[in-house]
Length: 331
Image (tube, rainbow, N blue to C red; front, side, top):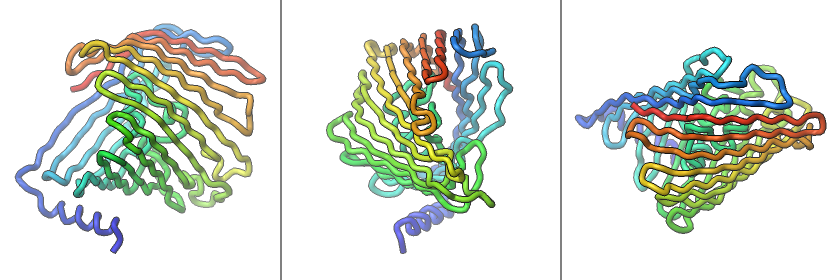
């Protein structure tokens, strides 16, 4: 019997042994910002001061016993000049804690790379990290997720549909994502990750001409008051599985932050990407973020942030500058 079958059997058996340790929790998290956007080289109705509800998470968790639990997280956003999104199920999974730091999750659960790197970059309420922000990957997906964390090496593997959490669907094959991190010293990691599959683009009569692939790597350092790191990503045919046209994209992201007081910190980040390396090799996108944040109360964190996005190509030059107040509310 394979390891995965043993783990599944173990977890299913746990559901039949619900104990008096059962516990249910309901919480929510909101990312809200009020900012001013000024743009050059493009026509847009997003300029000026406006409010954005970037994320509204409603989390439901139920702990059956010390090993077994279930998690459901709904996700809604309402961006400027847009209608509210539908209610997405960002998380909907059951999980089982296995011996020696192992974890098995069944359902729509976090994918290995973004879940790992988001914790290293921090400040998610301002913007997501390089890979999801530039649509190099999605944060969660439907499937079987296994991870193992210890003091020296951590790794995770997900076998998923590839359809993502916004519009869950099943293709004609499964996709695989994996990552591994080597903990060289306390707070100091070297990590690599990868993805391979069809991303459900081979669904129904669509042919599978190409394979979607992604490679990630990161070196990062994180202690109580300091975060430093760099991330690299390269994708092949991420949206061209059923297309005769091939493309690739890549990018670098770097970040640094310093918590100079128990409740206050400063942070900076710089990303540079090439969104169409083959179809438009001259197209480059640069992103700069500078900010200061303050944990006002256990339920509220605020940040004053400035951002700049510059896009250049043979045919255009676009700029977007944004300044304002970002906040994270926890209830």
